[in-house]
Length: 320
Image (cartoon, rainbow, N blue to C red; front, side):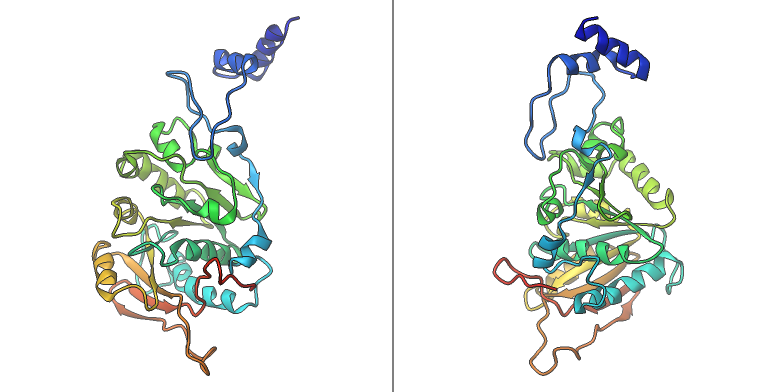
């Protein structure tokens, strides 16, 4: 029996839907493609994720994360871990329906900022890791900054297709095919996917709304953390915010002007639950551990925290 006949027999045994496409794949391997690019596909063929993303597991680099002052599972008693315990607790209370107000889709949490460089990706990763430490929670970390994704590069994870590819394929590509398992059993990661010139329209589509409803209701214990684009630079962030139950807005201490913070909050609407995190805060000498977190409501759906640990710069990385 020839190689082609063997391939056809295998296809028939496994009941694959697209025998011709599978046969071509056995005859001519698909060319390699760069990270973030979509592989070439025959016209009309069903889009599929690259093989390494189909239910694949990626290894979170804990040593690298420690060097970048990111939370890891062995940092349960660190000062940084305590800070994020204070940040996550009101969010989790809202998810459990124990907050001051009833919040729809409370398990969908967007982390954003007014402008770039304020620490939103740093906070999104740490918040996801902190929630993953909970006994009865699972976490899906989504790189929703589709214009400039950075979660994967921050973690040193190689990715291919992702969220945008699922939406661009009219959901013919299943999100499970591009969602990556990690070496933490209760943590999943969804990459942003390839760049697309109609990313805003894709995020505002009915397919995206259906995907968000699925994320919100399919697993009762799942918390979905979106690293979003800055609010004042792109339209994608406002579209994402309209689908979220809660928004965490990062403000860089001694960097973000007050008027930009006000403009960013105004884009979120009066009914949105918004928490503020003061990042890159450097307490004065003699008050290193006594500054507190500044938690409290100051308006409808608004509350704030102070994160005493500055996001490390490349020349200022430190161990937890």
